[in-house]
Length: 218
Image (cartoon, rainbow, N blue to C red):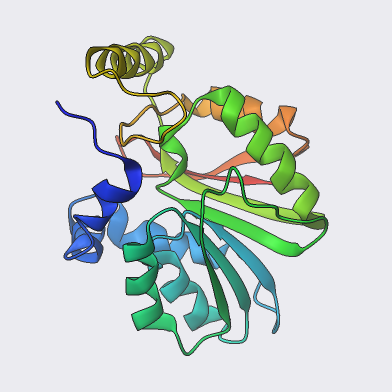
């Protein structure tokens, strides 16, 4: 398979993306609403969305908390434009950037969320991001992570081996994001969150036989 740059991959698939995620992903018709239900509902709640995409979880969240103040970060401008077309009338600030590079400040947000975005990155990179995120949350601020995870440690290692092989085969640089799924196991993801400073990390929901899981970290 030929690897595509992350932003190019999503730009090419923005049309029909929402329908695909809701209908073709196991649990997709339910986990956006469930994820939103775990976020704060007080008027003016400041929420950060890492990899907000077209804003499927934010559509659900604004139904519950119409006066929230949301900041969404995404690498794909095409995705952000689709989100803006749907939710441009809400209090939402959109940033076209890598959330690894974007400064998040300190005690800037009451909560953070990420859905179907972070399964592309290794533990070391996530730990740096989560440490930055932890500092950006108010005391007792919650991070809700909904994603899919590797079913075993062996599979996790295989994903990363395959990616390394493809990048070497195609002479691709390491400092550019390419679309390829490299999910950690749930246990490893939880360990990374704890190392980053989150003291209470728990599984909130899982979908049947699938590996889709909602984690909450405080």
